[in-house]
Length: 267
Ligand code: ACM
Image (tube, rainbow, N blue to C red; front, side, top):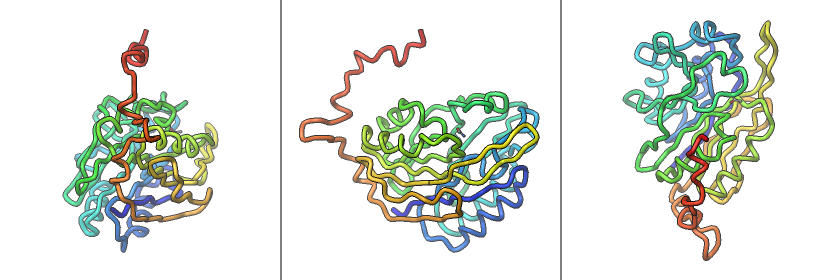
């Protein structure tokens, strides 16, 4: 399976420009699955929910997402793209899984980061696994990295490749994802953005360094911090089937969930 990411610098509030940038970069691509950053069409640093709603897309009538479907159709591939999702008065920080015939799944970010709490509604979609050409794909978005339960719940459902659109501002995620791939024996593709969102209420700088990690935590590739990069590589998703960490340790079979009840009990 040929998988990869496109790291770029979306411009705030310029969806047409950002959409065109993606279409141009991927116009001749040969891949099965490409992951794009979080909020790749709109930019990231909204002031409040009124502003995020203004730039959000209704997936049922989105010019820009329709262009992504066209691209997926023309190149016979799947894309995962982060976008602001408008549903009447609700606004979610979402990721769409787009195939040659349309949107196949939408995941809404569960764990909102910092001021995102003033701009988005918390995600309400369950963690599920999607099938692409017989390969099981799980989706999480950026700050979900800080909650190891997310990768675990996806991996327990058979996810072989975790796809993570991201707009990272802290420096911890890239290294942390190595651990997620060791403890779950999965692949992970982190598609981050770079550049800055300079807004009247502040400036955020994003860290780039998009990456692909193999089961066992091997870093297959990490992009530069502040540069465009389209990276595609061949992986064997079956490498994610074995959960053996040592000869006598299966990281799934060895779990002791009867001792973990605090994890699912809020109080
Ligand atoms: C983030 O979740 N965008 C940091």
